Length: 402
Image (cartoon, rainbow, N blue to C red; front, top):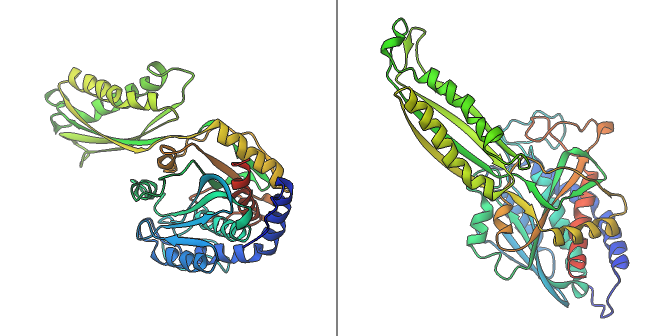
């Protein structure tokens, strides 16, 4: 631990972080590749958590606990007064077969780090080591969250919150490597960053019969098709045009033969938006439209609405400080302006307990052939981006207490 009693300037901190992150970069890459070779699905991250716990235990100055069976909390008490900052990385993988040809491709059949969570964990681990070495200079307390099960609802973030990890936290940040941003670009938005993600099931019941006698039936397929079209009025006619809302019917099940009209069909759908106010009104609109169309044709309809992750909304004050940490602390990266993304993620559970910010780290490199999107069987990311993530996390506690 750095025992210096003289506070270092932010520029001196940035120089120290840059030098140390450069020195340990090969090891951070090795951590990432180890986790990439040994991915685990949501709620099953046993070996991943054990690996991270061993590496964290080797860092002097950290107090490491298990809030849940497959998540980790490492705490660093700094040598200077300040706020409590939580920094989070997700650690789970996806049910996907890795089709890359490289020596760190997944060893586990049909399980793959196809979203970059292995990189997030390696970044935060590298930052934890640097900050522990700067302990006497670190303001306040830093908590490192290695979170399980981001990819599978209800998500690991809420479980960690329920375990008490956010008690006393003043600010919280997280970051994600992005296949749509070139390496060297970092985006920090004010306000909405990611959308909510809700689901619905409509069970429509009519009266089946022979296709030759449709007049004797109440055709749920025809009625369901009308419902699909009418649901788009929620976006075009029931939502403020200044607000974003996506409503997609993604599955239509029913019928078993060419010449039989079925008794019932089932429709599945996805709803995404950036506003909790808009989100709150959608279930009633879906139910009203579906029931209205069904009733007009003598059918009945039942709605099951499943609330998923809430929108991720960045706090502008925290976002401004993080942008300063990027511009002053990461020499080889530059701030990029992007629009909010309609993807979703459970970091929102932490934001309900403290203001925070979600950061997008560019990790695309056409020159290296690293161009595939997230959740693709050939997904990879430019490992130079790991350096930016480490530097972001390692500089952040100083700027958020400046």
